[in-house]
Image 1 (tube, rainbow, N blue to C red):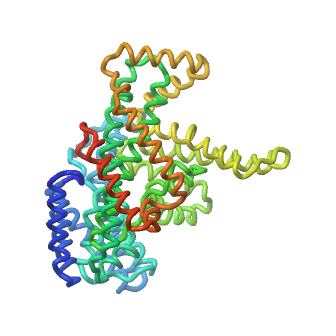
Image 2 (cartoon, rainbow, N blue to C red):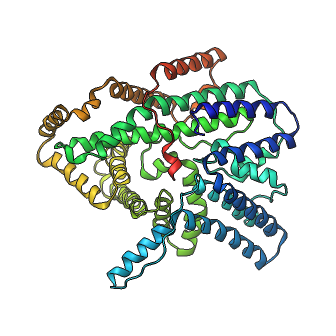
Image 3 (cartoon, rainbow, N blue to C red):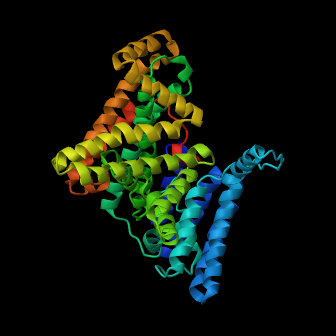
Length: 493
């Protein structure tokens, strides 16, 4: 039941009708309890029990932590953490750990044949386990009081607009809203519909247009002679990923508003960051906040050094994205980039600034250039590569741009696209339209500054809001990609 399916539209309208037909908070939450279960059951009916189990364990542990004293509190916290991590290890990481152990022991000439478990990964498990586990930790740290009503707690963890791809919500935000009475608000409906339409526009008009091109490039690199194909690929990859994931989050936020909730922003114009750390404070904000609060700060206190804590936190963040060493080492690549950026900045402040002072605007421009043309292409290529050898090959090819010349590879690219008919899609109207819309979106975000789409619209008149809604609806109807996908990229994480 993906967000852009007719089934989902019908489901949402039915639930909204039932939900707002009553003013009773208990009945509204009961309707959401059932709706969340139906929604998740449409994806993974066999794993609906796992979602219930995760919720019940953390609901139980949260209450026991609050009601207990001394070491008992810690034992129940450990039970919560152990249960959630066990679910992740069994259903997402078991085969990865087994394969890694086999590889390591083979180096030592030790041959083992353990049993592999072939299970489909429960959709959204990386999100709801982190959200539920964070609740138990917050209760243990006396940041919140436990929830005594299981229906309320289940609605908080399984709220269907953000269940399968985030954002990873905080109990201090979403759970508190679940417990408060809600009424239908026209302003919220307008904001919600606008966010939903913007999300659909990003996903169906831009992301789905670019996805076939990204796949064509990275799955057929052997067919190309020009190194510029990797440059094109990584540009298309980042635009596709951003529009797909932020589009989902816009839809989730808009749906939440239709039900009277406000969920956190997960993106805040990430391509306008001026440092690697700032990029991740703007990109998938909820995961960055979770990693920072529950991994980085505790690790920094334990190790006594922030640099080692940062390495551990980024390694875990990489591994969160997928059960493979390419994802885990992706976190290490980000760590090295952050350290390099920090060292360059310190060298500038210590040795260069006094002799060659530059204005803040020039400095920001240099930093922005680094993010757009070094940091993002590097981590994007690494993330999209299926192996270390594929990444090494891509970097070697890009190196040829400097040794053999940009103009030479531009000619090769023209030849590639002329001789391989299967890649003539690059010259189709779809590509030009997708790129124009992407750059238009970036220009719009530049005018927004640090505002979200919702904040930007909030200050506008009702007439302006309706013009925006009409314009996005028009674009969605007439510019929608015909080759749309059935799911969102971050569903797989």
